[in-house]
Length: 74
Image 1 (cartoon, rainbow, N blue to C red):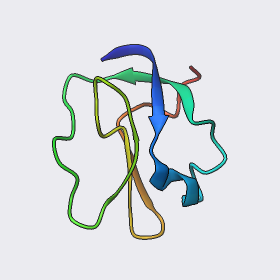
Image 2 (tube, helix red, strand yellow):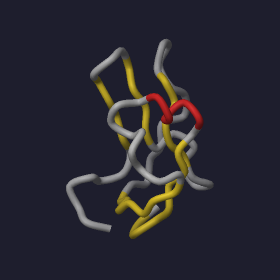
Image 3 (cartoon, rainbow, N blue to C red):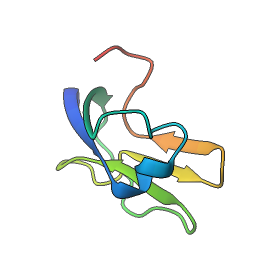
């Protein structure tokens, strides 16, 4: 997945302090050829798209992981 792609928030993101103010669908910049196949135990699944089912997750109350590149403007 390379370029600007659309990511969908999952229902779990409605209560997440980092993602709750974002629209249900938003553009991100992605440049990756590998994907997370399974989230670790206890992870909260926050965002996805058709190419990558695990675009964002949270573990605990303050550790997030994303597949996209938030440092780029989309």
